[in-house]
Image 1 (cartoon, one colour):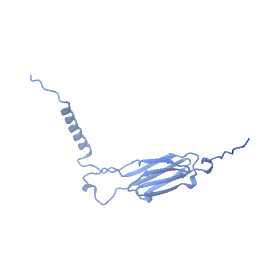
Image 2 (image 1 turned 120 degrees about the horizontal axis):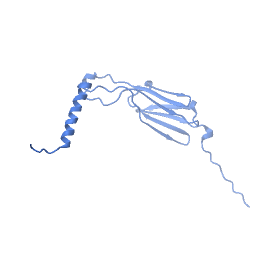
Image 3 (image 1 turned 60 degrees about the horizontal axis):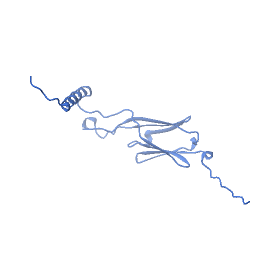
Image 4 (image 1 turned 135 degrees about the vertical axis):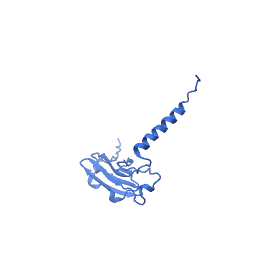
Length: 147
């Protein structure tokens, strides 16, 4: 009986090949266009007068985004539609995600809900949440009294 040297990388390569074959059988040979829910990434920051939310929504038009406030919750909802320029069969690779999305944020009591504004420019949705006047920090001057 001959002694064989054990090669863990060969076994990993064989395992990967077997897993690839299993997934090809389950999903078919070609890749499908990814549709479904996705979550746009956001940046949230605060200035003296407002809270700003910036969401990346590339390829989404103004008509495909809905923003509303329910109680103390800001809801951003929309859909990134699949571009119908080409048929699915002509794609070699499709890594971008398409489909519906939704983000919700609990609003602090310090926001003036009726003055919220939103803009969409270059695939970035910017939502301005103005603070109430009484919440803004006020500077108090100090008077010096002579003795």
